[in-house]
Image 1 (cartoon, rainbow, N blue to C red):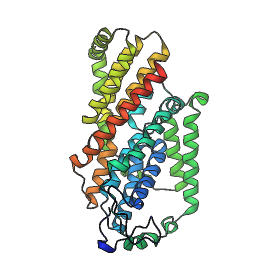
Image 2 (cartoon, one colour):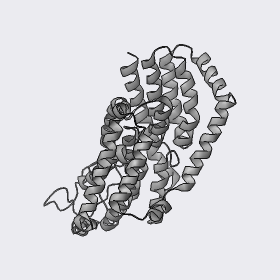
Image 3 (tube, rainbow, N blue to C red):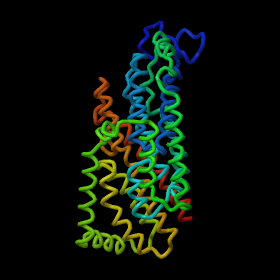
Image 4 (cartoon, one colour):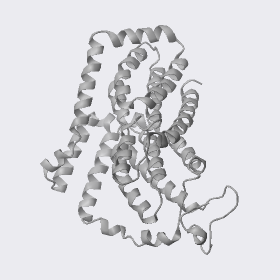
Length: 366
């Protein structure tokens, strides 16, 4: 049942009701509806804006709403991050590991949509249903504070509707260009850079101000990481590991896919999935090169991508979006501890990975 309103707290989800249901296991639905709505917004935006950007946009809004409702923001932020990591797995640009895998394997934006989006939709729907159990003790609601939220005028937040329309048009054009990669043969990186340049032009933003907001330390970190991986490739370390993996797995490619899926999920949960994928991608490439059937080889890439993406929900440090959300929560007075996040993330990771394994088996090996 809900707390926060004393014996006179009301359930806005049931007009005319004085209190939330008192039956065992019952909950007022309004708090859960709020969580589901925020999760859907996050999951729908993540495949096109990438999960890190989406969290940076949605998390502050969530904190404002929760503050107005006088409820803890932590459960809602955690649910959003989990939804973002699931939704971001659907496209080439939705999750940074997908960009690394796509460039290494030569997979297009459309390839990711065709092979990753179906299981992502299924996993997300199951996750939404599972939140009723997973966050069952987190739905607090007090109707007395609902009026403060309902009084907010969302249109006042948009100070320049014309600029918003132009920016959305540029974003739509960039997404379409990603989808036309097989026709125009322009790399997604070029499309993104051109889109960024056009966005600067239509918004008339100050270039120096925009460049100061770029996460240069993160970019330099990845540059150094890729240099180290290239060094391992040129010294033969990656090739030796790949040869060993081929010898161990033999021609049992379903076992290879299973190992990649569960291994990536487990390792990606305790190490940031971006450096993990950057390190493992050359090894997977070497294994795939030994597979005589190109379709089976692609199945190994999809198993690798699904494991790495869904493993990003495993712990508080498994994905960059997790770290960003925890940072926002700490700055706004809603601190999320490592264990508080991880106890939800591990459950979702196990569930999503098991569903992904079933999907890989049914689609590629039966």
